[in-house]
Length: 228
Image (tube, rainbow, N blue to C red; front, side):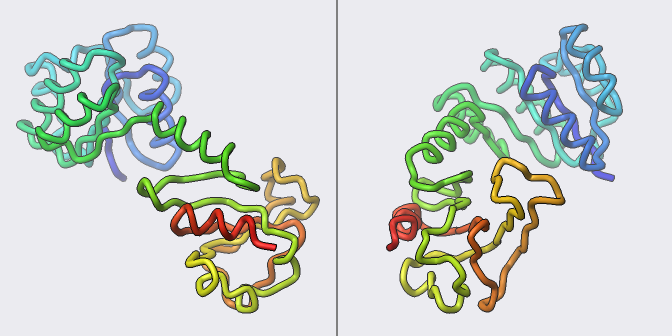
């Protein structure tokens, strides 16, 4: 079982910790706020009150064998940098930090943090792309130019196989999944209504109530969406 240390149990940290537990990980959560710690106790393995910016507090914890740490402590940029440094010196295997600004992120990268996340920025980009792109249901950015998009197929694609559509040749995109919705309601993701096929074959058919999961350059995916 993997073990993670989550520092900061506000909304982001709490949801990360809860999701890790739901995915069969053991989580130790820490916050200086008693109420946040109390809330987390019902959802994660261990939740304790403590100040992670105090090196002695970190050294008193048996975390040397943990798989990683996630730092999410609100707006205190200096504290998150200090905690990351302490964790590196202690020997934490992997350190992930929520950044609150581009400058914060640059500093974290300079001191050797493994992963810097910008949840608010990334969610804004994801939502904006979903709203701006035609027939887009969901969007996961990979780089500034590339992403994974759930696309409602154009009418000309319906009842054709992926082999016949030749999407890689025509648009430079790859279909990595097909979602089939029995009742045509894309908001109903119940097992009875929605089925997904990962890595579909060339013979798989794009149906009227299906959604294509497409990976590629965003400009190419946009051309695909506008196909006649």
